[in-house]
Length: 131
Ligand SMILES: CC(C)(COP(=O)(O)OP(=O)(O)OC[C@H]1O[C@@H](n2cnc3c(N)ncnc32)[C@H](O)[C@@H]1OP(=O)(O)O)[C@@H](O)C(=O)NCCC(=O)NCCS
Image (cartoon, rainbow, N blue to C red; front, top):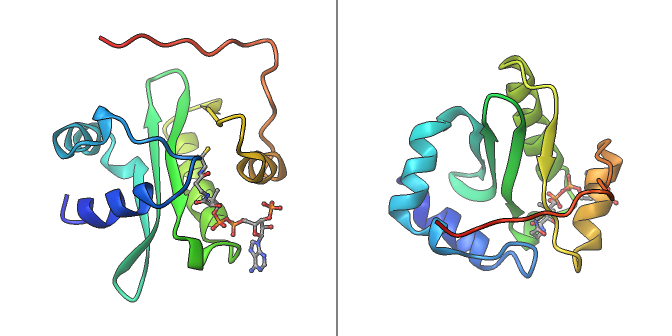
């Protein structure tokens, strides 16, 4: 949680690809960190947080959330390294498939995921409900 302010600032400045929600408040992020501490990763440069990815394992699927790299550190492979590390950790837990959601106005992220083997699930309609 010591990294929370830096991580939140990164999400805040990540652009339209990361939407901040009540689930991003400190007490909610702490719940997530307690549940999957080994899947919630940051990248650091000289002690400064420059990238973050939140992985999740529900026992059946892996999920990726709030993946972001600070603008001045993009296109250097940091995002790919974070993603591949979470994938490896999910696989080690027995996860067979990892899913994620991309906003429709985010073609750059879509291209990165496709390069790394992700495929659009065109027959799926994502649905959700606030509890
Ligand atoms: C998506 C995001 C996290 C990627 O982070 P990143 O660190 O730039 O990712 P990488 O550097 O690994 O890859 C980005 C591109 O740089 C290229 N690249 C990687 N290493 C490189 C290097 N050493 N030199 C030049 N280019 C390089 C990659 O090939 C990749 O190209 P591609 O997108 O055409 O596949 C970042 O763009 C971001 O924070 N976006 C805003 C938030 C967002 O949209 N998140 C996703 C939500 S679904």
